Image 1 (cartoon, helix red, strand yellow):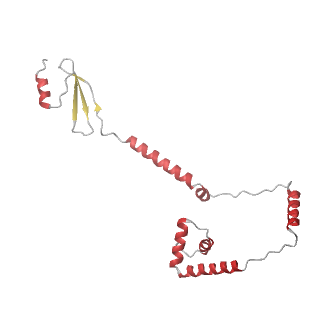
Image 2: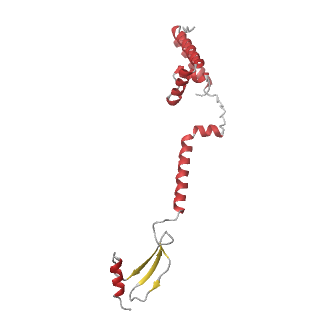
Amino acid sequence: MKSHNIERISALADGELKGLSRWLTQRHVRHCPQCADEFARIERVRETLAACPPVVEMSDSADFFWSKVRREIAAREQETISIPMPRLSFADWLQVNRGILATVTSALVVVAGSIVMLQQPTRSGAVMVERVDTVIPNTVATPLKGAESDVAVIWVSGLEWTPDLDQMQECFDNIET
């Protein structure tokens, strides 16, 4: 709590504050002598009022009172009452609908992130550049470019795969053209 807010101190004394708002106000009252005095004054007034509750005396009996209330309701039941609707400002609307606003904002962030991720080029896959016929019978060489500019892979279909480059060289040497 940044300032001396009498309404908030009164709400604390009445037990109306909950959670973080209550904790912050209590902390402020503990550290601010002016607000601590105000809180103590409010507590004394509450104790005084609780010690001397007002005595309500009715001029009529309870049955007679409620019969007058029913008669008044019956007399006014045909009347229409027009209650003007208050106009909410944009700030009021945001305050009332902050959950919706948070949901929409989160959804927009997810959509924007997805769009950005989808537009970035993939670095893991190879891209086929062209197809080349070879002088080796029953084979086709397909050059592929990797994500790195200085790396190129040539895939020759129709040959046996060997993980060892020396064995692959022997395969090429043994091919008759």
